Length: 161
Length: 360
Ligand code: SF4
Ligand code: SF4
Image 1 (cartoon, rainbow over the protein chains, first blue to last red):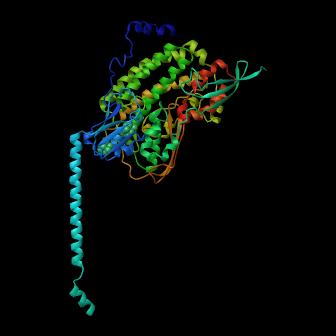
Image 2 (cartoon, each protein chain N blue to C red):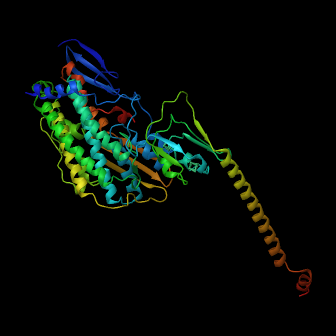
Image 3 (cartoon, rainbow over the protein chains, first blue to last red):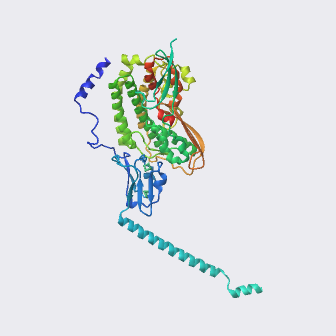
């Protein structure tokens, strides 16, 4: 009798606690590697924009100069493609979903003042180096030109011939 | 002959999780004609190809459907791999097979639950979904997502399933199989369930063939069709035969799907036993795609076709999906003719409609 087949099950269920949990009052358990949400180690970010270009939803934006990285969490589908593409491996997929947001729009992460200062110094040094390299290259080019150009006497000699 | 009238069915209807509208022309209580209309949730995913490159499209395509998401991603990636002419590493093929079969089990359990709900057996509905939860946990454990896997990539897969996790899967499918035995008996032997399913909504083999039915819907009418036999992923190495039934009624469709769960469990065991020990999970693809390809895969609901066309740019020229529900709609309308109005809800369910993939 198939009616009675579920009788033991029904009896058991009378005394068993429910299989569901009272989330959010009880914490949810996520397996390792669950795709919950994206976090960034903002100080390691070099502002290359690879994540922005790879995101299928266009939810990311990055400003290299200001040292900021923004994500609109409502648009993110947690695909993990940005994590795969980031050359500095500073993006991470974290288990557990975001807590519900209270307002729409992007969340912006800004680098720490120390890191911003470091970045600024590095940029200046790089600019100096680049300028020096450029000057050196220009000087070298001028030298080469001077060496290649025949002197006045030689030119006169060439004319005579 | 009674007076004819038209009753709208859907897009909001208790048996339907998704919106489809059918105009039912009825005479007394009998349906004489069914005219479907779809288009309530068109999202334009196919047209995104001109704004998303072929790698980003993997994530878009897999979101065509929430139930067979993995298979959508796999079908697209297999098509792209043919365009690139790359061979996927053997382990990746087996991983794809394992994920695809897990997806099939959870999809069929979902459908069984909905069917039980459709004929008013709430307890059975909960039993099916409780069992399905274990499969969802396996999916989340292995891929990181309960339903959307995001593990496919053109050229292979991005995640591995290690030995420990494979063992957990084996243990879980043993439990699922044991629980399924009880559920199966209720679906197939209970007389009140039989009275709702047997002899209702018969589609003959000729009708199913002429109307282009796909998947379990076609197999329940005696057509031995299964795209897995075409030999994508690791299916050529696995031993299985399509499950068919001859009667073509609702009961046969229920029978086919239940048996396919057992078949999938068997395929999972075979795949886990045979999976090669490799570290390579994907073959890198270089450059931009150039060429076109038709890929056919067997989804839980039947045959899905993916067409890709590329001309050496990172963006595809054309991408198209033909989903199984789309192929089964003509069969559904034919099946609804000469049935009782009270059976319509259940009959619509028996093709396992997935409207969001139909409309993409
Ligand atoms: S996880 Fe996907 S959708 Fe979210 S920000 Fe990264 S690339 Fe974009
Ligand atoms: S890809 Fe990584 S390093 Fe580059 S901008 Fe994005 S987060 Fe920063």
